Image (cartoon, rainbow, N blue to C red; front, top):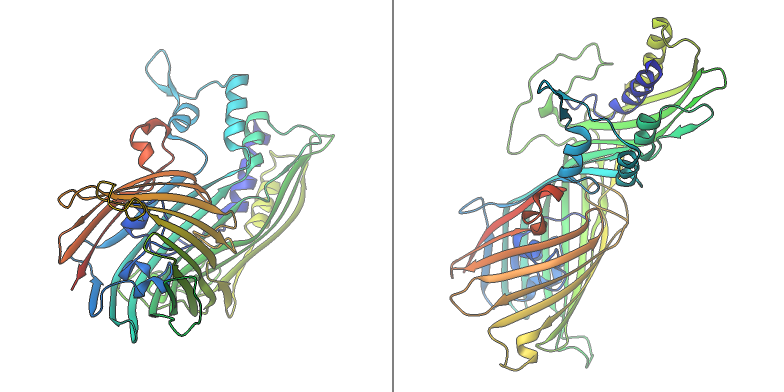
Length: 480
């Protein structure tokens, strides 16, 4: 038991410096969320910014749209895991009642252990994210002049990855000669704000006879960062020797940066004075950078459309309150009851922090490809109402927060059976960080105003005990 306690202490101190000082992206509009996160060909107006700027041209001439915090703010939020359900969590970690009505730990059978192993197989991530639009304005003049857009949008994301072999160690104990490796543990998070300028127009100059319309769009972004924290390296392992001595090895490196508004006091800085964080709608940035979105959209006819975009090409340099925590541990404990040895281990694992000049991180660059099909126009008036069907492929090029190198496929449909019935949307998403999602949403077009509501995890409403995440998207936009 003492050895298990030591091991947990070792892992805790190896990972704690990730958060010791903290005390494929794009704002997810509710329409696209309701379509299962398909947007490359279907996003329009203010909601095309961040997805495919070429779609900004698809509206009537002299058309103005904007979003503000009223009447409904443009908000998307999600929190949860991609590997363990509420039911499994309550079963394994919720405890049971003893004969006196007290909550005690559950005794795990061999079958229980095997099921828990299968849940944690491959590791798993805890993810929370929030995005909102402070202000977005778009205006289309005409086909010749083109369309213009401006937006201010915020993105906050935190993601941690649980090491796969930790649960094996906790349940089976430290077997002699077995090496437990925790290199797959990760932690990262940031708060970004981008100010974007977008331009889109059709390309009638191109001499081609395939598409009825071919449009091009580009967004230039100035990006501010208000906090950043991420592991750059975690190489941690434990081994029990033939004589029950414990060999601990750790090589950990973590970078952090914070806005002055956070008033972060690093433990290695004896001159800093602890202060409460100060709230501001426009905080002082800890980092600055530039980004680029570029896209094309092609209308084959009034039925088929195709889109291709590359988003968030660029980087951000963090220069305020930038610190690096590093630790290298190679130690053998022969007596884990010796407080001096334990204290020495804690000091080794905790590592040392220092200020550094700056760090640079890439933006969450992603490739997006989409196809859409207008079913009602294909059936030439024989379908009740309007029906749009869309498919998207999303491929991230790095593992920055909310981005993933695992491809994501999604398919969605939007149906408006009659004028007085709201838009009904649904879709399915496969791959990426979330693995699977069944989305549902509705949209209300009230002329001057449009309201949208959606959840990308609608299926969890019918199976609450098997839920892994909670998520919701709402928005409204003004149209003139």
